[in-house]
Image 1 (cartoon, rainbow, N blue to C red):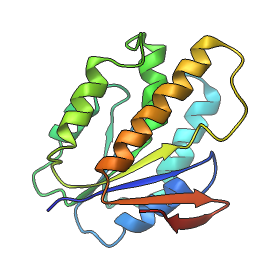
Image 2: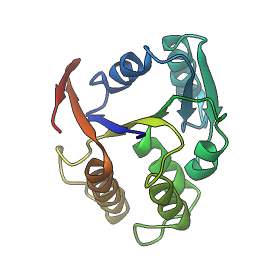
Image 3: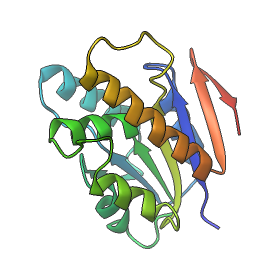
Image 4: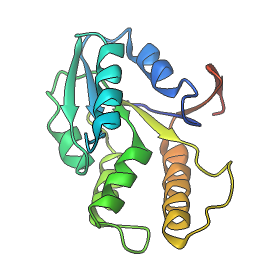
Length: 171
């Protein structure tokens, strides 16, 4: 049975590092990167993340269509780290694919999780623990991320919460 692990927490909480540690023991690993290099800061961030993982990962860069990214993985892939769900959601909003909190790309991604092609380690930000956003668009993003995180936590066999570099098993 292919397992799903959800690693969540705040920004810079150690989520990605822990996800890579979970995947380290596998031989055939993939890393699905959702970030887009839209400015110099994001390009530097992407480069830093590339350096954090070793060359044993097959890297798939896909900012929008996660279903396609998962289907494109080689059959021998044992585990894929998908980093990160909230960046992906931001991309969907940026590309105006989400109007009311959902879109076909979200539905397709959730559908493939019913029978994932390999073990999955999903990284996401917990965005509901901070201040209430001042504008409707940001509140819609927060609400959409919270709803998807709840669905992912329900589907996941294991949920890990990272805080200040410490990872706690929640489920």
